[in-house]
Amino acid sequence: MSGGGSDTGGGGSDTGGGGSDAIGTYTLLVDLRVSATIEVGALGERRFEPGPYAYTGSALGAGGFSRVDRHRRTARGDHDVRHWHVDHLLGHPGARIDRVVRSVGVDVECAVADRLPSGPADGFGASDCDCRSHLSALLGGGVDGAGLDGLTERVRAAHEEVTTPLGGRVEVTSGSDRNAGATR
Image (cartoon, rainbow, N blue to C red):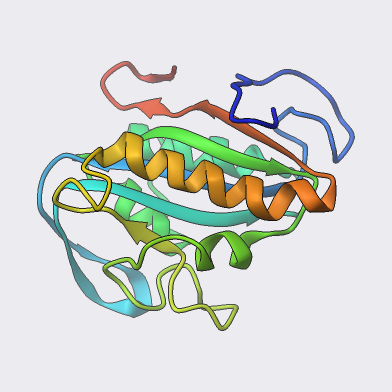
């Protein structure tokens, strides 16, 4: 919903609906609870400090936002395939998806990523574009001093800024909890 509201799903089979088969751009808000050194595909070994991360991607192909469901399964430990850079981060036992911000019906992946703070790994999620990275972070409490909540607000604002003029809709949905074994 525009204005930062929450939508936890729903049906719909058209590309502008709110369901998993809708298309658009998403940002995963990831909480990494421990320091981790992770092999990130062709990027090699990277060090990630504990804190909030935001990974921005697109869900424009067949299945649309069902890609986010796949990321949730990876974060829960239910899916072991590592295809995208973010799979390597999400597959770490200390990582969980806290929330997902979605821009429904629009392709604004690079525009959103460009409006977020720098991340710890150049090229992360950006092998098919000219962006520096599609992974952002606010470590050490961040400039807002609010950690995950502060980064979530910045992500939501970035989505709103680029989505609203295009007639898209911004939604905030729940993430995943590895310990619960289900999305929340």
